Length: 104
Image (cartoon, rainbow, N blue to C red; front, side, top):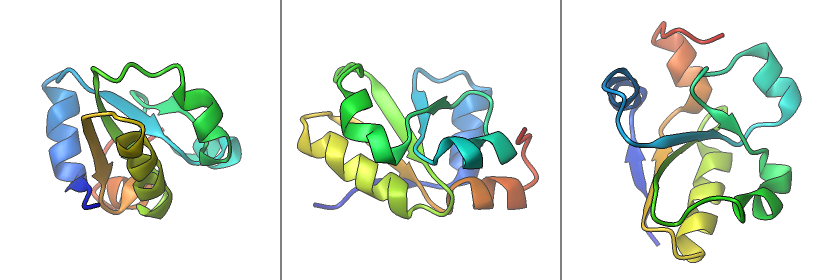
C-alpha cells in the first residue's frame, strides 16, 4: 500500500492556515520532551494501537516522528484500520527543526 506523504513545508502551511487536520507525533515521551511541534498530540508508536482506538476515522491526520519511518508504520496501521485521510511527514521532526520552524 502506498502512503501519501507531505513535506514539512506543506505541514507548516497547513498549520499556519489552521487546516482541519490533527497532527500526531509517534515518538516516545523522552524524544517529545526534547523537541516537539506544539500542535501535535503525542501517541507513542510503542502504544499506538492501544491509543489509536480514540481517533475518529472521519478526520484528517498527519503523522510524524523523528525521520519518517515510525510515522510511516503508524500511517499504514491507520489506513489498514479504515482511516481515509492519513499523511506521513517526510523527514519528521528532524526536517522540521532543520527548516527552522518553531519547534519547542
